[in-house]
Image 1 (cartoon, rainbow over the protein chains, first blue to last red):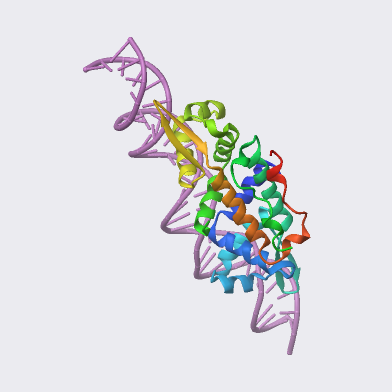
Image 2: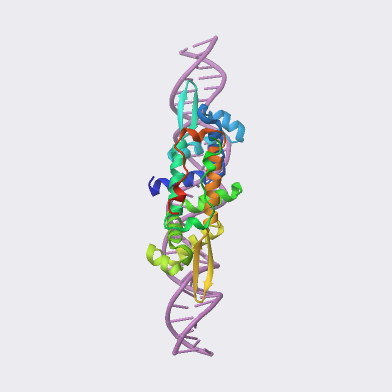
Amino acid sequence: MEESNVIAVLAALAQSSRLRVFRQLVVAGAGGLTPGLMAAELGLPAATLSFHLKALVQAGLIMPTRDGRHLVYRADYARMQALLAFLTDNCCHGEPCMAVEPLAGNCRRAA
Amino acid sequence: MEESNVIAVLAALAQSSRLRVFRQLVVAGAGGLTPGLMAAELGLPAATLSFHLKALVQAGLIMPTRDGRHLVYRADYARMQALLAFLTDNCCHGEPCMAVEPLAGNCRRAA
DNA sequence: CATATATTTCGAGGAAACTGGAAATATGGA
DNA sequence: TCCATATTTCCAGTTTCCTCGAAATATATG
């Protein structure tokens, strides 16, 4: 992932409504969610949610597909993984990371 | 790490000058760097750099100590690890992560 | 075709962020 | 003490972001 993309993804997640939306979709999994459901659950006006959904789409973190009258948004897990890979790579670039407890294992917990 | 802190850290890193500053300090390691050196290397005006350093300090990503006439800034690796832990935890909350190649190992590469 | 629902786009107001020059503060050295 | 250097704070201008009502668009159904 290029630096400009990394910044776009970080910026997309650095906002409370968007972070909540993304987490909602992560939890929802493959089934995804419609804007209507998300708006109801989060108490956001439709226009506000739509604004944030667009930002998440542009960052590549979520993707919509149409299902009849509904849109279904789903999280793009690979994009999130790519962000984590970039951050860990750069965090450890050089040799510093050994000073801190190792990170690994978190992502496997659910497996 | 609490959600408000996560957002603060993400926002701090979601800006090109700050991401570069932080990476500079990560690479610099325990020796740290002075604003003068960083400003020269990045081609930033002192006031602009100072503005971004303050943002990184407030996010808890870096810490200054005084050494005579100089300030020395150093990266807080633990803070970065905490961010990664939050993101991986939440990325995998539920069961989705198995669909993607596992993340682990990156951070150990340097060890 | 007419109507209802789902969702987005438009537009405006207000808040927050970024930039960089100029002035202020801190420290060391002559 | 006085000067030079390092760094920050102050400030103003500009830009970008957030919110949300209202209007527009897409789709389904009768």
